Image (cartoon, rainbow, N blue to C red; front, side, top):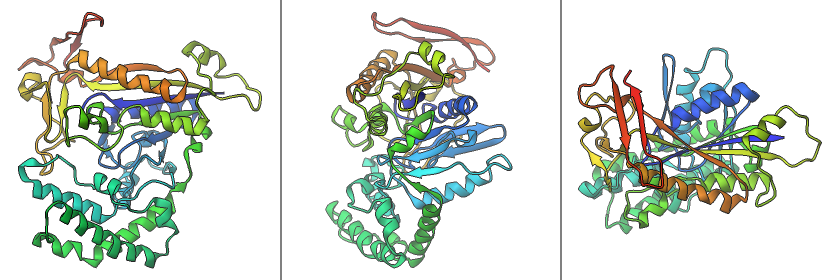
Length: 419
């Protein structure tokens, strides 16, 4: 038996086109095997992965971008869940799925940490107080959830509703005030007093949690073994990885592993690696795909990591951006419907793509796969937004995209047509 694994990883600061690639791979996997598990392997619903199907457009946050194709979603322990965002997106998606299609299954690891309204409020208040020194957070409480000592999904699910209400009203509110004090804020800002103590906030959260609990299936990484097609969808990008904080990028990073490390650990957990599950080449996979395998024979993994980049670079919010340039240098006609200006992160920033640096960080990140799993894998690069890289005024004309690499790499120079 061969299990096909694809891992979609952003190569830069996010917004590379991971949703587009995930949706495309999900179509392929569903057509081949009839089922696919879309694993959200890091971060939480601060992600925004855009998928367009005909006249339907959706920005995926709490569900896999393979949902339109019919792929099931899995939230492993490394993913943070937010019942409020989950329910809101669930209602949006129900109206966008093809008529007659049932909603794909959603699985959740019991150890997933759960964000409450008070982590989100803490996040927003602290960002407001930073003023011009904002970190560029989207305000959904990711960092506050990680450090907050809150409950896991299984722990909340095991509580009676009255216990959950007390947990929110006492524990989470108290932690909010503690975090403000730690950051030099002696009292709750007046503008936040009404919402922090509004009982309707807790009532709505409890309703959302109950609905989420009713819909999801609590399981662990072993659920991967039930699927012949596994599609990992990472959030953010390699330059926002938690380790980049100590490589010159400071607090303008994310507290999660954005590269191949989380997928490698999840696969190792599911299949009992290291050095126990053989990998297969593409040629061997084609040979054995339709063969009956003897019961009890080891699963063979065919794994490919796909690193995604635009033909240029973008970044949200403040922070280091070595190749930043005016948007007009890329294309003055760029129109981004997802990354609209907002109070938390301002206007999206643009920069040129340094292919040498990109390939260097891809190779460095990919090397962790074998170190963690002991199995072989392939890697590939996907470049999106080719139609947007143009000289000012270019329309319906062939233009060159150039990227100079080190001598050890082949020069990239291709001709693309502006559509």
